[in-house]
Image (cartoon, rainbow, N blue to C red; front, side):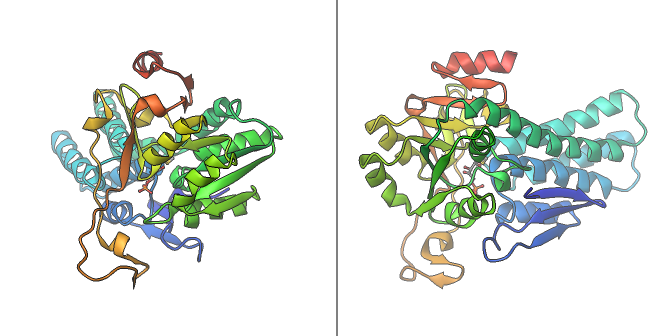
Length: 345
Ligand code: MRU
């Protein structure tokens, strides 16, 4: 199994997603600041993996604090969490994980537990293990939407690498394969950072899942040719009405899917839902460095000083989404209602 993120001897070990697919190497973070840098620099990426990394960063930060009176420990921990929260703005899972860590501290203070650092480390490890279990449940639910022989298009990387393991969108495909279904995956390369070409294609090869790599602008043509039966992608944040932020390019795929009557599925854990946001218009969209668009691995691909836009995510309106696959089952339209119900239960 691919080990995306592991807590080992009071350190956080990450597979270096920038080095893939050329090298399978690992980065060891000893401080919470190193984990923040790894999140910003995309060493670790994908909403659920970012959440797990944030929780582990908070645990590292807590573990390094000197002995302090309780109220001061709480304030210092809260400041560390605030700093981690600024690592990246879009993935809801980052904030969800930090809220869980803060609640863990409060609950343990209330229970008068002595070793708060140990409790926080244990919570971060639970968040990590829990993510894999959630993905397996999501996979099982989603696998019923997949038919034997399907050709499935995916965008970005919503696989083991984007989570603590198994994956969300790719988890659904893994589960379908475990049930003996044959399938073939079209992998969008996912400009500008190539999470599809570098990471999803690598995962597919590693698991021997038949896959074909395409550039993003080929997807519409393949849909027109009847080559794609279903589209399944992950999510970074889902608003209360089902509008979904995911990797830039997802919106175009959803519109194309609608035009060609192709089911368009989102697979995401409940921790990706942000019910405090009425619609996707309120989701903060990260704008990343121009260099991601004007060069690749340091090699220029555009003239110097050209003006650039680089939004890392877009928002797909709920009406284009056929269903949302979660660990608690498949949500259908109207999403406002199904999301409210699933969050209550
Ligand atoms: O910028 P990234 O690589 O962190 O973006 C990742 C995505 O957009 C994924 O599709 C999303 O986080 C879902 S991952 C299960």
